[in-house]
Structure formats: C-alpha cells, structure tokens
Image (cartoon, rainbow, N blue to C red):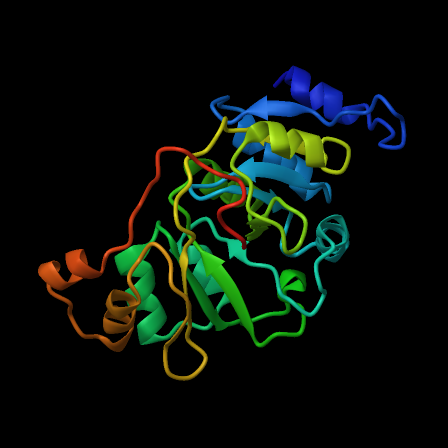
Length: 251
C-alpha cells in the first residue's frame, strides 16, 4: 500500500531544532488518522490528539523513552503516574488484575468517562513504580482505534504544561506542541465537558475525583448494588457547556 503524504512527511525525520520546524497536523476525520498516530507511537513518537474531554498528549504506555519525553515536555513530576487509554476490555484484562468490581464497572460505564485505578499485572512505564495503573476505554473512537492498532495502551495526559488548564482549542495545541510533538491530530475546537470520574479499586472502592459520572452511581455498581434511574438522574453531572474556556479545568 502506498504511503500517505503525512507518512512520507514523517519519514523525512526533520530536525526539531530548526526554526521553521513544524510537526505534521492531520485531521481527526481522516480515515488514516488512527493508523498514522499508531505508527508514530510505535516508533516512540509523541502525539497530541483530541479526546471526548480535552486535548491529550499520548505515546505508547509501554515505551519508557517516550514516556520520559512526555514528562519532560509537560514538566510533570515523575512521581505522578500517567493515565492510559485502552482499546477494549480484552486489553484491560491483559494489563490489569480483574476483579468483580472492575468487571462490573467496565461493563457498565465503558466506553465512557470513567477512569479506573486498578492493580497492574505487569510493569508499565507510564505507571512508574505505582502498584496500580489508571485506565479508561474512552468514548473517543479515534483513541480506541489508535490503541488497538498500536496493540498497547496509550498515554492520555492533558496536552498542557503541568499545573496549567486543560486545552480545548486546536490553535493553543499547535502553539504549544508543534515543535515538541511528532504529530498533532486536529479535532477542531472541543466543547468543554467535565473530566472523567476516577475510582480506585486498590482495597475498598474509593472515588479520587468526581467527574461526569456521579460518585454514588460508580460506587453502587462497583459494590454490586443497583441504583435507580431517578437517583442516577438526580446525581448526574452536567455534560456540556456551550462556550469552552481553556482556563476552566485542570487535569
């Protein structure tokens, strides 16, 4: 199969130190986008891409050198593990210890805005020395496909400098990362929505961050209890605001 123009551009291996260097930008609507992103990450590259919440920086979660680059680019404390995106439940079972609670949560809420911190089965560079790894199967079809084509979890940390607000505007992503990333996936300007809810399953289920899914509903499902539709609706978080602001959220 003939290489696409974007793949030919990547093959040139331009020097990021050149003043006119600008990494390739590919539309998220391009059918080749997941394939090209996976190819870049397989080679140890960094990709800025859209998720159902904000823009993210990603690489193979199993590539220690690429993971180190993301920490450096963001100025992130190395003691803080990086969250991961996994393609599907099969990948989750490969890299994490399965429990009744984790199976119920994956079946009920994924793909969707829930992040689970579960005990990992194997060493994962993105998780560092932590006993757990934080993962989600996202609603974003692009991210799921990229992970599936890579055959590994991909890092999904906010495309920002550590401690700064999450970014929803593609122009801000380009300004910050055109000379630092190896590829940018252009998903346009994203609507501002709450981040994913985070639940830790090391021990009794515990909510680490309230997000788009109400904590009561998450804990009820994790424990095997049911939650009525009225209660779920009452506790539901707002899903979208009309005018996104890059200074509204931190991640």
